[in-house]
Length: 233
Image 1: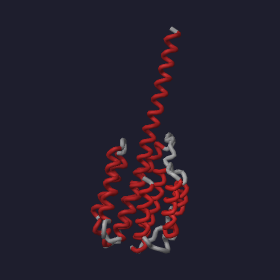
Image 2: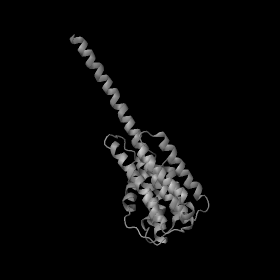
Image 3: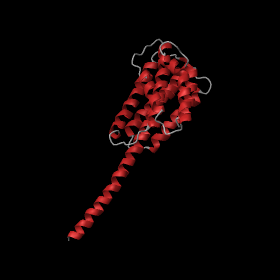
Image 4: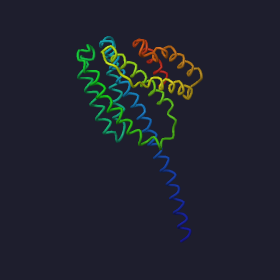
């Protein structure tokens, strides 16, 4: 009898050691996806703002549609994201219905309405991330760098349409995210040369971005951010 109990305990211990890593792996996968989705959500704001600043010219519409596609594809692969999916769809629907307004800035309420549709998306993602942050064990330096980059670019672009649209915004996290982004460059699992390349590219627009309330160079900022973004993939 004692021998049987010992075998049962050993089997139970083995099963437990298998279940825990699987659960952690699932949490890690979900957390990684949420960080990427968070970055896409900020990029959505950045791209529609860029679309507005460029008056819908060039490839700005294709860029915007690509971000929407990326978000749709990622959400389709994720589990238990109904609350996020709903606000994502609402934000995308608002943008698609108001692209003409964005390109011409023919409605002074567009900027405020855009924020009102976008903010619930960020809140929903933050709430879902909170469920996994405690159990996630990976550093996610690449995904966190992507998020910091998109947060900076989104705020820079949105600030520009606010200023030129006669509005003002006061809550900016550009400086904090700039420090975070540069710190994460050093943590990326890439070669020193690749890290240096990313740092060099970012330094090209860093001063411009930090002087968001004094200078406007949205085209240069976006083009350089594209190059940095490619290096973070």
